[in-house]
Amino acid sequence: RWNRHSAYGSNAVFNFNPSWLWKNRWKFFANLSTAYKTPTLYQLYSEYGNKSLKPEKAITLEGGVHYASPKGKYEIRLTAYDRRTSDAITFFYDPNTFLSFYINQDKQHDYGMELEGSFRIDNKTSVRFNYAFVDGRITTRQNDKDTTYYNLFRRPTSTFGMQISRTVNKRVSARAGLYYVGKRKDLSYDAFYNTVEIDMKAYVLVNLYAEYLFRGSKTRFFLDGKNITNTKYSEAYGFNSLGANVAAGFRFAL
Image 1 (cartoon, one colour):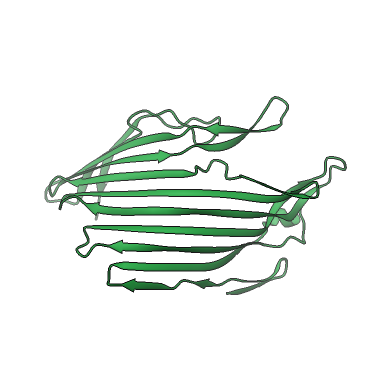
Image 2 (cartoon, helix red, strand yellow):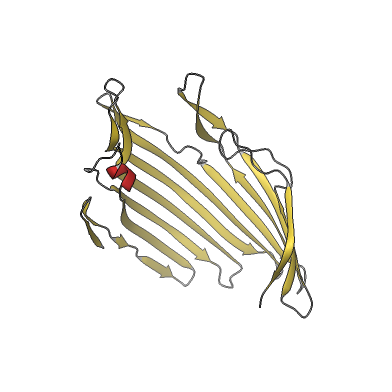
Protein backbone atom coordinates (compact mmCIF):
# COMPACT_ATOMS: atom_id res chain seq x y z
CA ARG A 1 0.00 0.00 0.00
CA TRP A 2 1.29 3.43 -0.93
CA ASN A 3 0.08 6.69 0.58
CA ARG A 4 0.86 10.29 -0.37
CA HIS A 5 0.26 13.17 2.06
CA SER A 6 0.97 16.87 1.57
CA ALA A 7 2.49 17.27 5.06
CA TYR A 8 4.59 14.13 5.59
CA GLY A 9 5.23 12.91 2.08
CA SER A 10 5.02 9.45 0.52
CA ASN A 11 5.01 6.23 2.51
CA ALA A 12 4.62 2.60 1.49
CA VAL A 13 3.95 -0.51 3.57
CA PHE A 14 3.89 -4.23 2.80
CA ASN A 15 2.88 -7.48 4.47
CA PHE A 16 4.20 -10.98 3.66
CA ASN A 17 2.90 -13.94 5.70
CA PRO A 18 3.57 -17.44 4.36
CA SER A 19 2.48 -20.58 6.23
CA TRP A 20 2.87 -24.33 5.82
CA LEU A 21 0.44 -26.98 7.07
CA TRP A 22 2.02 -30.37 7.78
CA LYS A 23 -0.02 -33.54 8.34
CA ASN A 24 -3.08 -31.39 9.16
CA ARG A 25 -1.71 -30.99 12.68
CA TRP A 26 1.30 -28.72 12.52
CA LYS A 27 1.17 -25.22 11.10
CA PHE A 28 4.37 -23.21 10.68
CA PHE A 29 3.91 -19.54 9.94
CA ALA A 30 5.86 -16.33 9.54
CA ASN A 31 5.03 -12.69 8.99
CA LEU A 32 7.15 -9.80 7.76
CA SER A 33 5.38 -6.45 7.76
CA THR A 34 6.01 -2.73 7.88
CA ALA A 35 3.94 0.12 9.27
CA TYR A 36 4.12 3.83 9.91
CA LYS A 37 2.55 6.26 12.36
CA THR A 38 1.91 9.80 11.16
CA PRO A 39 2.57 12.89 13.31
CA THR A 40 -0.46 14.32 15.06
CA LEU A 41 -1.83 17.74 14.20
CA TYR A 42 -0.52 18.99 17.56
CA GLN A 43 2.98 17.72 16.79
CA LEU A 44 2.87 19.44 13.40
CA TYR A 45 1.10 22.76 13.99
CA SER A 46 1.02 23.61 17.71
CA GLU A 47 3.34 26.13 19.35
CA TYR A 48 5.78 23.21 19.71
CA GLY A 49 5.02 21.85 16.26
CA ASN A 50 7.48 20.89 13.58
CA LYS A 51 6.19 20.74 10.00
CA SER A 52 9.28 18.79 8.95
CA LEU A 53 8.41 15.76 11.08
CA LYS A 54 8.52 12.39 9.35
CA PRO A 55 6.26 9.46 10.26
CA GLU A 56 7.52 6.86 12.70
CA LYS A 57 8.37 3.72 10.74
CA ALA A 58 8.44 0.13 11.99
CA ILE A 59 9.31 -3.28 10.62
CA THR A 60 8.14 -6.43 12.39
CA LEU A 61 9.25 -10.01 11.95
CA GLU A 62 7.38 -12.80 13.69
CA GLY A 63 7.16 -16.54 13.34
CA GLY A 64 5.82 -19.52 15.16
CA VAL A 65 4.21 -22.90 15.21
CA HIS A 66 0.70 -24.12 15.99
CA TYR A 67 -0.21 -27.72 16.83
CA ALA A 68 -3.71 -29.19 17.11
CA SER A 69 -4.35 -32.78 18.21
CA PRO A 70 -6.22 -35.04 15.74
CA LYS A 71 -9.47 -35.09 17.72
CA GLY A 72 -9.25 -31.49 18.87
CA LYS A 73 -8.61 -32.44 22.49
CA TYR A 74 -5.81 -29.93 22.85
CA GLU A 75 -3.88 -27.33 20.88
CA ILE A 76 -0.90 -25.09 21.50
CA ARG A 77 0.60 -22.08 19.72
CA LEU A 78 4.00 -20.43 20.14
CA THR A 79 4.91 -17.11 18.51
CA ALA A 80 8.07 -14.99 18.70
CA TYR A 81 8.41 -11.47 17.33
CA ASP A 82 10.92 -8.68 16.83
CA ARG A 83 9.91 -5.09 16.05
CA ARG A 84 12.22 -2.17 15.22
CA THR A 85 10.99 1.42 15.01
CA SER A 86 12.92 4.34 13.56
CA ASP A 87 12.34 8.10 13.45
CA ALA A 88 10.33 7.90 16.66
CA ILE A 89 8.89 11.31 17.53
CA THR A 90 10.15 12.82 20.76
CA PHE A 91 9.94 16.19 22.50
CA PHE A 92 13.11 18.27 22.40
CA TYR A 93 13.89 20.86 25.11
CA ASP A 94 16.97 23.06 25.36
CA PRO A 95 17.47 24.15 29.02
CA ASN A 96 19.75 27.01 27.94
CA THR A 97 17.55 28.66 25.34
CA PHE A 98 14.21 27.13 26.48
CA LEU A 99 13.61 26.19 22.85
CA SER A 100 11.08 23.35 22.67
CA PHE A 101 9.63 21.40 19.76
CA TYR A 102 9.03 17.89 18.44
CA ILE A 103 11.74 16.05 16.49
CA ASN A 104 12.41 12.65 14.92
CA GLN A 105 15.16 11.08 16.92
CA ASP A 106 14.60 7.86 18.81
CA LYS A 107 14.92 4.23 17.77
CA GLN A 108 12.82 1.58 19.51
CA HIS A 109 13.54 -2.15 19.61
CA ASP A 110 10.92 -4.48 21.12
CA TYR A 111 10.91 -8.26 21.15
CA GLY A 112 9.13 -11.08 22.90
CA MET A 113 7.10 -14.25 22.65
CA GLU A 114 3.57 -15.52 23.30
CA LEU A 115 2.50 -19.02 24.30
CA GLU A 116 -1.14 -20.02 24.37
CA GLY A 117 -3.07 -23.25 24.39
CA SER A 118 -6.15 -25.13 25.46
CA PHE A 119 -7.14 -28.69 26.29
CA ARG A 120 -10.27 -30.57 27.27
CA ILE A 121 -10.11 -32.60 30.46
CA ASP A 122 -13.44 -34.23 29.58
CA ASN A 123 -16.58 -33.37 27.62
CA LYS A 124 -17.62 -30.82 30.24
CA THR A 125 -14.35 -29.32 31.42
CA SER A 126 -11.78 -27.31 29.46
CA VAL A 127 -8.69 -25.28 30.32
CA ARG A 128 -7.16 -22.32 28.46
CA PHE A 129 -3.88 -20.59 29.26
CA ASN A 130 -1.61 -17.90 27.86
CA TYR A 131 1.80 -16.51 28.68
CA ALA A 132 3.45 -13.41 27.22
CA PHE A 133 6.97 -12.06 27.52
CA VAL A 134 8.01 -8.63 26.23
CA ASP A 135 11.19 -6.60 26.48
CA GLY A 136 12.44 -3.51 24.73
CA ARG A 137 14.91 -0.68 24.62
CA ILE A 138 14.94 2.84 23.24
CA THR A 139 18.01 4.46 21.72
CA THR A 140 18.08 8.24 21.90
CA ARG A 141 20.63 10.96 21.25
CA GLN A 142 21.86 12.74 24.39
CA ASN A 143 24.89 15.05 24.57
CA ASP A 144 25.94 13.99 21.05
CA LYS A 145 26.01 10.32 22.11
CA ASP A 146 23.57 7.44 21.63
CA THR A 147 22.07 6.25 24.88
CA THR A 148 20.06 3.04 25.17
CA TYR A 149 17.78 2.19 28.09
CA TYR A 150 14.63 0.27 29.04
CA ASN A 151 11.48 2.34 28.52
CA LEU A 152 8.46 0.00 28.59
CA PHE A 153 7.03 1.60 31.70
CA ARG A 154 3.83 0.12 33.20
CA ARG A 155 4.27 -2.88 30.92
CA PRO A 156 5.24 -6.08 32.76
CA THR A 157 7.91 -8.30 31.28
CA SER A 158 5.79 -11.39 32.00
CA THR A 159 2.05 -11.98 32.18
CA PHE A 160 0.18 -15.25 32.60
CA GLY A 161 -3.48 -16.21 32.54
CA MET A 162 -5.39 -19.44 32.99
CA GLN A 163 -9.11 -20.16 32.85
CA ILE A 164 -10.97 -23.35 33.74
CA SER A 165 -14.51 -23.71 32.37
CA ARG A 166 -17.06 -26.31 33.48
CA THR A 167 -20.49 -27.09 32.03
CA VAL A 168 -22.37 -28.67 34.94
CA ASN A 169 -25.47 -29.45 32.87
CA LYS A 170 -27.53 -27.89 30.08
CA ARG A 171 -28.46 -24.91 32.24
CA VAL A 172 -25.54 -24.35 34.64
CA SER A 173 -21.98 -23.41 33.72
CA ALA A 174 -19.09 -21.80 35.57
CA ARG A 175 -15.51 -20.73 35.08
CA ALA A 176 -12.57 -19.67 37.24
CA GLY A 177 -9.70 -17.49 36.09
CA LEU A 178 -6.26 -16.74 37.49
CA TYR A 179 -4.21 -13.83 36.13
CA TYR A 180 -0.61 -12.99 36.97
CA VAL A 181 0.98 -9.62 36.16
CA GLY A 182 4.72 -9.45 36.70
CA LYS A 183 6.97 -6.73 38.04
CA ARG A 184 7.21 -3.52 36.07
CA LYS A 185 8.42 0.05 36.40
CA ASP A 186 6.59 3.36 36.47
CA LEU A 187 7.65 7.00 36.54
CA SER A 188 7.00 9.60 39.22
CA TYR A 189 8.48 12.86 40.50
CA ASP A 190 10.39 13.68 43.67
CA ALA A 191 10.05 16.85 45.75
CA PHE A 192 12.26 18.73 43.29
CA TYR A 193 10.26 17.54 40.25
CA ASN A 194 13.00 15.21 39.11
CA THR A 195 11.83 12.06 37.32
CA VAL A 196 12.34 8.89 39.35
CA GLU A 197 11.65 5.25 38.53
CA ILE A 198 9.26 3.30 40.74
CA ASP A 199 9.35 -0.49 41.07
CA MET A 200 5.83 -1.92 40.89
CA LYS A 201 5.15 -5.25 42.57
CA ALA A 202 3.73 -8.27 40.77
CA TYR A 203 0.18 -9.34 41.61
CA VAL A 204 -2.27 -12.18 41.07
CA LEU A 205 -6.02 -11.83 40.49
CA VAL A 206 -8.62 -14.58 40.89
CA ASN A 207 -12.03 -14.26 39.20
CA LEU A 208 -15.12 -16.48 39.32
CA TYR A 209 -18.13 -16.54 37.01
CA ALA A 210 -21.30 -18.64 36.95
CA GLU A 211 -24.57 -18.52 35.02
CA TYR A 212 -27.92 -20.29 34.96
CA LEU A 213 -30.16 -20.68 31.90
CA PHE A 214 -33.84 -20.67 32.76
CA ARG A 215 -35.80 -23.62 31.43
CA GLY A 216 -37.66 -22.98 28.17
CA SER A 217 -36.23 -19.49 27.66
CA LYS A 218 -33.19 -17.59 26.40
CA THR A 219 -32.69 -15.73 29.66
CA ARG A 220 -29.63 -16.30 31.80
CA PHE A 221 -28.85 -15.21 35.35
CA PHE A 222 -25.18 -14.62 36.08
CA LEU A 223 -22.82 -13.89 38.97
CA ASP A 224 -19.46 -12.33 38.17
CA GLY A 225 -16.85 -12.07 40.94
CA LYS A 226 -13.68 -10.07 40.30
CA ASN A 227 -10.54 -10.13 42.43
CA ILE A 228 -12.23 -12.38 44.99
CA THR A 229 -9.03 -12.65 47.07
CA ASN A 230 -9.14 -8.85 47.54
CA THR A 231 -5.60 -8.38 46.24
CA LYS A 232 -4.18 -4.91 46.77
CA TYR A 233 -2.51 -3.79 43.57
CA SER A 234 -1.98 -0.78 41.34
CA GLU A 235 -1.78 -0.58 37.55
CA ALA A 236 -0.34 2.94 37.66
CA TYR A 237 1.69 4.39 40.53
CA GLY A 238 -0.43 6.47 42.89
CA PHE A 239 -3.78 5.08 41.71
CA ASN A 240 -5.71 2.35 43.50
CA SER A 241 -7.63 -0.45 41.80
CA LEU A 242 -10.85 -2.21 42.73
CA GLY A 243 -10.76 -4.74 45.53
CA ALA A 244 -13.09 -7.72 45.69
CA ASN A 245 -16.35 -6.99 43.87
CA VAL A 246 -19.33 -8.96 42.60
CA ALA A 247 -21.81 -8.15 39.86
CA ALA A 248 -25.09 -9.97 39.19
CA GLY A 249 -27.66 -9.61 36.44
CA PHE A 250 -29.69 -11.08 33.64
CA ARG A 251 -28.75 -11.55 30.02
CA PHE A 252 -31.30 -12.50 27.38
CA ALA A 253 -31.53 -12.92 23.62
CA LEU A 254 -34.48 -11.90 21.47
